[in-house]
Every structure is written in C-alpha cells, then in structure tokens.
Image (tube, rainbow, N blue to C red; front, side):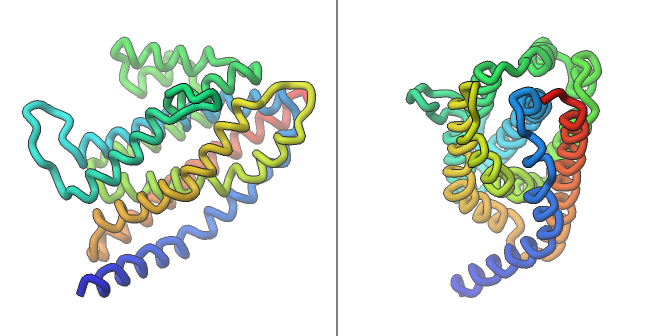
Length: 267
C-alpha cells in the first residue's frame, strides 16, 4: 500500500512537470542570458533580480511558520515529515556559508555579490528599510520606487503567500522558484567564468552554490514536501499546477522587463 502511494505521488509530480514544461523551457532559453554580456548589463540585472532573491525568503519563511510551531508555548504542528523538510531547507537558505566559510543567508550573499560587481544596493536597502519600519509591501513598493518588473513579481509572490494555502505555497516554492534556479543560471555561470576586468567571484559562488544546493538536495526535499501537502487530492494538484504556471509567467514578465532595460544599457 505504501509503495502504491509513493508511486501515485510520483505520477502526480511527473504530470505536473509535463504541464509546466513549456513555461520552464521559455525561461531556461530566454534571451536575457546571452544579452548580459557586459558588467553594466549585469549590474542592471542584479539591481532588479535582487527583489526576487529577497521575496523568495518570505515565501520560505511563510512555509516554515505554517508547517512548524514558531510560537510559545510550543505545540506539535502538522506532520513531523513536513516539519523536517522545511526546517532543513531553511537552514540551507538562511544560514549557509559563503566562499570564506562565513555564515549568511543566500540573500546576504547576493547583496555582497552586488557590491563586489559595482551594482547599486540603494533600491533594495531602501525597500527593506521601509519594511523594517512598518510599511506594508504595497506601500513600500511605491515609496521605494521599485521598478515595474520587480514590483509585479513581488505582488505575485505575496498574492501566493496571502492565499494561506500551504500546498499552493509549497508547490510554487518548489517548481516556481527552487526547482527553476539551476536551469536558469547554469549557462550564465559558465559564461561568467570567462569574464575579464572585474572581480565576480562572489556572484559566481552564489550561482554555483544555488546550482549545487537547489538543483539537487533542496529540489528533492521540495518534491517530498509538495507531495505530502497535496496528497492524493486531485483538486489540490490542479490548484498547485495553476499557481505554478502563474508564478512562472510572472518570472517571464520580470525577465522580459529586465531584458528591455539591458537592451538600452551601455556595454
């Protein structure tokens, strides 16, 4: 019986992958990768993409807050299996090690990479400062003058967060974010290894770390978590697939927007 259930979950995963495959292919083969061919264009990319790196952590912490107990007094929440899966992912994302074995989140690694590459961190720092001082997401987007591409992406992510549906959040996290990153950046990282005239070691390490961690272990954990939360409920898998497609479409819109900025940037 257990073997049958596992096989059934695997079947659901494979059907889901097939459904979202066209959007994934568009992202993996997007023109943005070949068009980032100078440090100025990389800086434009990073200054917009950093908002997606930041809101990824909010989606992650939403899952942890709802799949585990983060209040006092402690009470057991949900299944021990999903608690384990999300906590292990959080450890890797929130307190990984950089190239110098210093503990930091992947977002903080990205910020360090931006500084090394000469990209401006003013926009993201201003946005985070507003959030830290009590501004809501929508208000902070406006007051920080977040770009149109990044703002629509943030809005979509927090729409998913605000559904309160764990199976949807887990699915988008796994197939719209975690599972997607390695394919998107593999070509990008390889081309950066041939860069000249600027030190991009921190960015290379960030990308390679994501490919190593998110392309393997975290993806497998995400598959398990999504399967646990969707179970054998067909309607949950349909709902999850629809949300993933929306998330991937939102990423395409972000990529198209940044690509248009890159096209007008000086080489």
